[in-house]
Length: 552
Image (cartoon, rainbow, N blue to C red; front, side, top):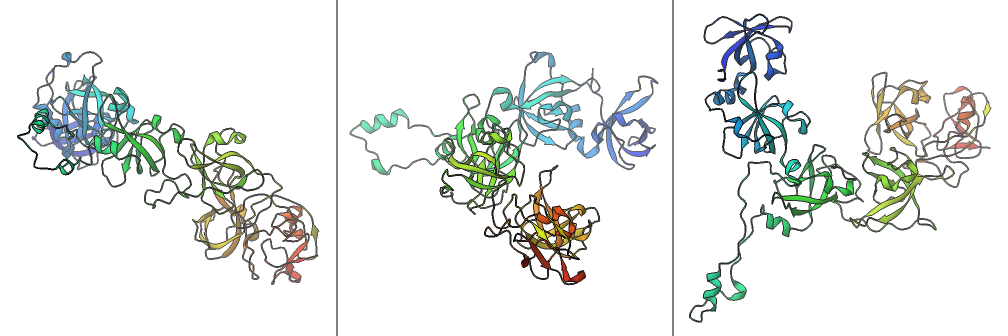
C-alpha cells in the first residue's frame, strides 16, 4: 500500500466542534473533516484560519472523501519528507525485535526518533510511549522501540517505546545523540622496546614524561572523581537524571540506586551525593548510592541553596539521650525533624517511626527521638521516633504540644475552668489577604505566609479580620492536609504579646478556662488569670496572649 501524500490548506469553517471544512491550497473543493481525524490537535478541530496538512481518505459509511491525519503545517514537514523515503521492509525485522535510537523531535503531540541504524527518522505518537506515562520523552532520551505499519497512512511508526536502560538493564543516558567517548590507551609496545635499547633515550626524564589529560566527560574521569554532588533534574518514577555540580552532562540513575530514599527516586530539586559506576551491559556511566547531600541540612529540594557544612554530632538530651522536636518536612519517603535544641534539622526515614505505623508522622507532630549514625551514609539521623508525652512543657514559638491552665475573669466577672491541649508558641503578624472564605497572615518573624480559616478567628467572631489587621495566633497542622495553619487568631493586645509559655508558670499558655467557657478566659500564665482589655465592658476581658495576665 503506497503512502498517501500530504496536502496543505487552511481551516475555513467549523460547526460547534462537531465537524468542519478545510480550503485546499490546490484549488480543489473544500474538504470535510471530523475532530477524530485531527491527530495533531488532540482530536479537536483547529481554530478557523489555522494552516494545516492532511491526507485524503474515504468515509467508510458514506464513501465520500474526507481529511485524515490533520496536523499543523509547520509541524508536518517531517511527515512530507517521509513520503519520499522508501518504506523499510518491516518483514525483515524479527518478531519482537527492538531498534534503538535517540528522541530527535518532540512537539508534545508527536515526535521523531533518530535511529542508530542510519535509517530515516521514525515517527512516534504519545500513545506509543506508555513507559513514559503516555508522553513523548524529552529530546536526547535514549529509547528502544519496535516498528509497525500505520493502518491509515501505510507508513512505519514506532511502537512500545521504552527507555533504553529499562530494556537492556540499568545504565546511563545522555541528553544528546550518542557519540564516541575518548579513552586513554596504554603506550604501544614498540615504545617500551625502544626504551630498552641502549642506543635510544627518551627526551623526557622518567618522572617528567607528559601525561595525556582525561576529558572531563570520559568514563575514566568520572570514575576517578569519587563522590559527586548535584541536583535531581528529572524524575519519571522509573528512572531519573541528576544535574552534576560543575557539569551540564546529566547523570542517569534508577530507583534501585536510591536506597537512602527508600528505593524510590527523590523529588526534583533534591540535593544529592553519589558515586559513578560503569554499567557492565551498556558500558556507560550511571549514578550509584544516591543519597541526600546533607541529611542534617534544614532544607530539601531547593536546587539553588548553598551546600552547608556537615553538622556536628548532636549532643544527648536527658539520661537516655532522647531528644524532642516537631516534624518539619514529610514527602512520604523521608522527612526532617525541627529540633527544640535549635540544632540543624534531623533526617528521618519511615522505618525509624514504628510507633506511627512505619510512616513519617504528619507535619507539626510533636515527637521524641534518639539520634544515631546511618550505617550507609555516615550521617546523623533520627531513630526510634515516637509521640511526645502530653505532660511535657516547652517554651518558645517553635514549641508544639500540650499545655494546661485554668482561668477566671470575663466581661462581668464570670468564671469558668477547663484544660486543653494546643501549640505552645504564640506568633504575631498582619493579615495579608482575605477573600471571605480564607486568608493569609504575614508572620513578623519573616517565615512563609500562614493560611487561616474564618473558624480559627475566635477573637473576631468567626470571621477573617480585614487586611492590615495586627493579630496574634498559634500554629497547628490541618487534620485533612497535614499542612500548618493559623489557629486561635486574636487581635494583638495593646499590652503586647508573649513569646510562648514559661516553664516556671503553672500550666503555661493553654486553652485553659476557654474550654470552660468564654467568660472564663484563657488562663494566662498563672493558675488563675485575667488580662486587662481596654475598651471592654468593665475594662476586663479574656485575652489568651496578653503578656501581663492578672493572677489570683
